[in-house]
Amino acid sequence: MAAKRKLARPDLGLESSRLRSQIESRLLEAGADQLGVAVEQARVSFSFRLDNVVFRLTARMPDRDDPQLIRTPSGRTRTKAQLESALKAARVRTWKALAAWVGSCVEAADSGVMDLAQAFSWCVVLPDGRTTGEWLEEELGQAAASGRMPASIPALPAQTDRTPGLMEVIQELFPGDEPA
Image 1: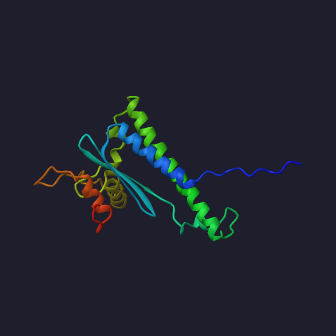
Image 2 (image 1 turned 30 degrees about the vertical axis):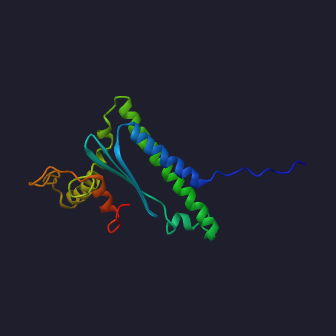
Image 3 (image 1 turned 135 degrees about the horizontal axis):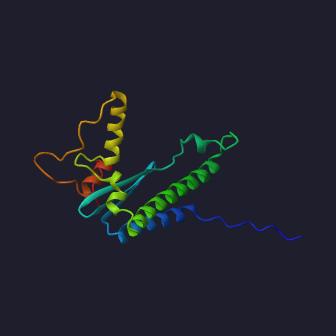
């Protein structure tokens, strides 16, 4: 009887790094510049400029406190090693989903379905530092609660037409951290 061979499992850390590089490459190939990446325990953000407009893509990353990771599908509490393994796998799934989304946005732009700025329109950084998606989410919540349409779309401050640069966006994401 032949001995069972244990299949090699991919290194999930390397897989996450590969997917991050893939996202960066797709954005740069699509014409983005001033690309910055911020990775935290609970989120990852890609900030970049495209045609002088700053964009920020932010994704929530799974963390150790996620109830779906703490317990197995059958309801048992995972051991520390099982939790770490489940956490790494969940993070790779998030990286894969983000890479697929960015790739499909770039593909839509390459195919002429829409331009890249339209594909990422929810991620435009507004003068107050929020993205259009964050602003709209808040406005829609208020509209739903009040039954009234939002008063206006975000306007630039009266004194300037300046949009925050990449370094300002990074400083907002990580206050107190000095750039290297």
